[in-house]
Image 1 (cartoon, rainbow, N blue to C red):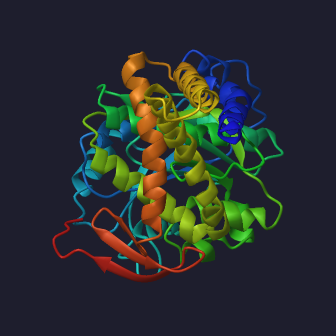
Image 2 (cartoon, rainbow, N blue to C red; image 1 turned 30 degrees about the vertical axis):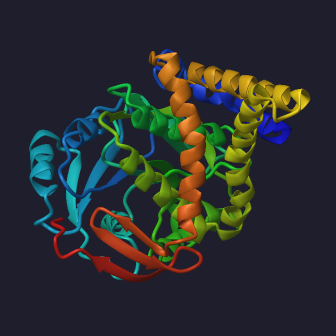
Length: 391
């Protein structure tokens, strides 16, 4: 119990400032302030696309309206028949800084990685900085400038941002997924363990080629962990940028959807960072074990079958961890009812542990109608495309 409380409290105290710097009121200190720009290198923003979800148009439009003056956007789809293509054509008619790249089907890596590599190849040596982004998060106007500023001013050669969930309702699953994403964001505040996030990563193109990152991505199911690990072997760390934050609107989330998403994230950890995944077994037990013990001890005390000191210890633990859960709400810049927040907080502890257990029971990673059989290191062994899936 003491170990769990100490761990949660340490992370909160250490990384709270990092998360709060991402609040909208804090972003004015970034590129819209008095930052020094010795030059404006050419930036290539590469966006792998598939599907045509309702939020994509607004998200992509936000990336076309950045304050940074010198960038182009490469919109990459698997083929011209992808359902994202009509959206691409609409964007091309509105913006001159965009190109449409067709990658073809992937055979040795995830389709997302294959699209990213097709975008890099299409540059033909042009551009100085590569930025990899997802297509479903809305970017504030200074996002791109904030993300690449550490590269332009040095000494960083790779930087990463992150995203936060903007809840559209008070469903427990919606708030729970918000808290899961927030927990990962807190880990970004620990710079020694920070890894790039594929939804917002910037890297010098020369570094990308010098360390043969394309070879790593070309056989992997994931983009960000393998990229970070590849460069970390050469002593290159990721620079987390607190103000380079994207907004992800979310409503109507279900428990099943939350479970599927979190299990997939932990499966990435299992195959790309197996030692960390194995070590997480202790964390999974730590999240729920003390809570279950404390609840049982407290109930046992009420029934007179547990010694009072043990029951009081359980009650004290529940009181402290509940207070920590309530404090966590201060890291969200939107109002959320405290009662539902705390229910989601406890649901989050059990969901994380349950999803971790599920990773022991499967060897397939499924995403957007495509399933990948992978081996250690995240290398793709087989790609299985659902016959009912339409790109």
